[in-house]
Structure formats: C-alpha cells, structure tokens
Length: 138
Image (cartoon, rainbow, N blue to C red; front, side, top):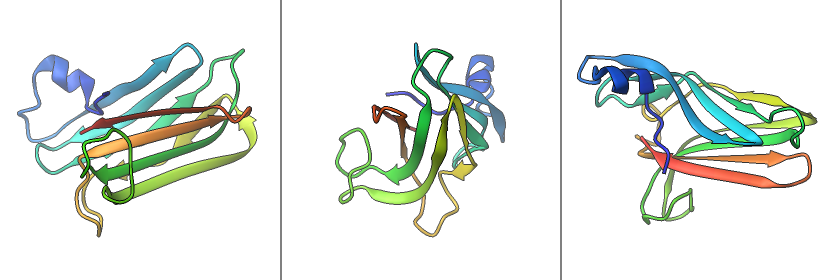
C-alpha cells in the first residue's frame, strides 16, 4: 500500500526532527497521477496534507470526480469500509465539465471531532465512469 509521507524528509533521514514537510507521489499510472502536496509530519501529532493534485495526462480519459477519505482501520482490509472502519475526515470534488487536472483541499489525520486517522483512501472517477481506487496508511 502507498504511504503518504514527506518523501524528501525520509530521504534526508530527518523525521526525528520536530516537524518535516515535503511532497509525495501517491499514484503514478500511465493515465493517472496523484500527488500529495505540502505533506507535513510533526512526529506523533498526525499528518497534514496541503492538497492533492490529480492529473490525467493528455490522451487519457478526463477526471469527473475525486474522493479522499481519512479513517481508522478496524478490519484490516484496504480501503474504507463503514462499519467497522471509523470515518475521520472526507473531501470530494465533483467536476461538472471533466478536466485533465483536479485538486482537493487540505486534510489532516488528526484534530477532528472523530479522532485520529491511521489510513486513507482515494477514489478517482473518469468521464467514462471508470474508477481507480488506491489506499494506504500514514
């Protein structure tokens, strides 16, 4: 499963620092790329993602919907399953005119009334109704 983490911080070996930030490629397929930007990890205080950039390169089906879910995994099965998994935060973007690039705003794995998330799931729907889903842990 992919891991949302500040890759530059991991490469530099500085995650022991109080806070670290960077960008992370979440998904990189021929016709779909997802990047988490402004990823910030403050060691035990949760992970904050400044935003997600979802891109369908030219020549690929355009994006019509993106949904991101942060949750606490309770069943050990990848992807959000309610119940038993517990929803912590959720963002979505429905696009009236399908596009090559879509963005989803900031989210945090902690600091919500529903507690702290340990997992995430991203679902992208293209203009033809095709769905790509990926999930991972923090």
